[in-house]
Image 1 (cartoon, helix red, strand yellow):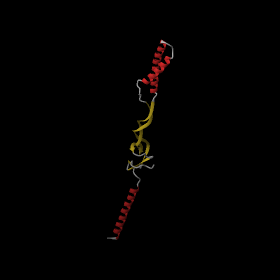
Image 2 (tube, one colour):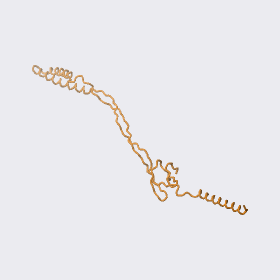
Image 3 (tube, helix red, strand yellow):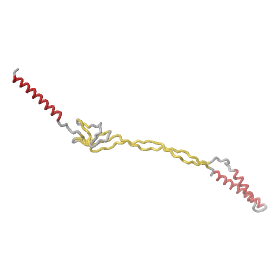
Image 4 (spheres, helix red, strand yellow):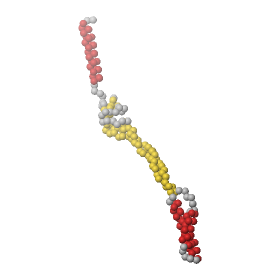
Amino acid sequence: MDKSMLIGIVIGAVGVTAGGAIGGYQYFNQAPQGPTEAQVLDVKTLTHTTDVPRQVCHDEVVTHQKPVQDQNRVAGSVIGALAGGLLGNQVGGGNGKTLATIAGAAAGGYAGNQVQKNMQNGDTYTTTKQVCSTVTDKKTDVVGYEVKYKLGDGIGTVKMDHKPGATIPVREGQLVLNQPNAG
């Protein structure tokens, strides 16, 4: 092999290597193709509302009628009739006295009956009972976000599980939705 041929091979190898290095350098250091972020234009919170029942109780005072021993109010009628008869007997004389005694007994019997009735109606006792009812509260949960964005010249909408910042990352022309953006 002669010297000029060897020099030619070395120069050719150096040229090919240099060309490859320059091409690789340009390939790895060239600017990325397309945008790296999409601009967020609007974010709407998506919610779901559910009814949550709960029981509410309070104490209530209840008035009860005591059991009546004398339903016909005989005791009041008898005592009233006796008192009315005694009073009627004090009035007048002769047949008028008898008539006044009978009228006094009848009026006294009725009055005694009514007095016993009022006393029985007023004979009460109170207890406290717990009264419960079910009320429904509304519970609202955030289920996601509807995000309107601008990527290049296009505008689109996407649903996300987290609230984005001012931009959404883009990789190889696609939105990266699975990681929160610090911006």
